[in-house]
Length: 319
Image (tube, rainbow, N blue to C red):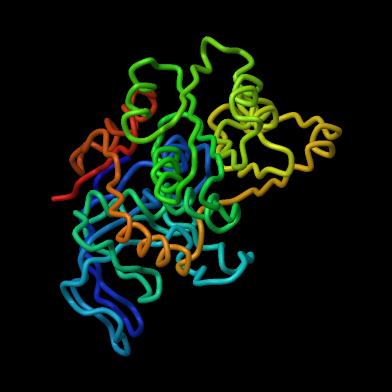
């Protein structure tokens, strides 16, 4: 990655010029940076962006200079079910992302940031928080009294914990670090299990819970078997991440017998993001930020992310 100078663009009709002030790291961004996700030469990375409107183009009425805004992962997915057309433009992947100071985006490719949020806090939301929100509230239809299993202490899992507790759920969590296990409990996890010392942790959680209603699987091959062991009869598994590999074996008879619902999902729509923001404000959810790097320290930020020592989100703050 290299830093380059570009002329500040001017918004065309229907566009907004945004002064981006912060971004946050997601595993998707890391794969782009490593070249594991192929992008066009010169692609600007980073799926998350939070900033301030600097100027608006002709015909734009919903935004004014000075408005605080954040990006969409899928800039063209406004509402409804996902389609190829709605999801073809991916920030920091098939389209330029937000590791830059200024860019012009479509006026409907933004939402406001939650009231009182800093740019750094807002930058954690468009990918990780929205993924957790969709998994639990949209696809899972989470109800008060349900049980939830989160895996690890990355940004999405921490948001899922916060959202689940705000909705009145009982939350199980996993970690391989005793220190992180204590921190998970301190922010609301009801029971935490060490997956490093318990090779049958999915079955262990079932013994404690009777089966979990909502499981957010982030590890694919490394976690999926345990997710199936832990999920309740008729429960829901949200397939979200590939931290442990890009494939996973499935015992079909077990899936039939337990009548498991599975949803593969990638982030969400603008409508979902707006509803999430309202819920965040109502419940006063504050992101857990582990560490903040400067704009020119993005490579170091990725190295820190790769170390796996972070708890919550890693953020990059711009000049």
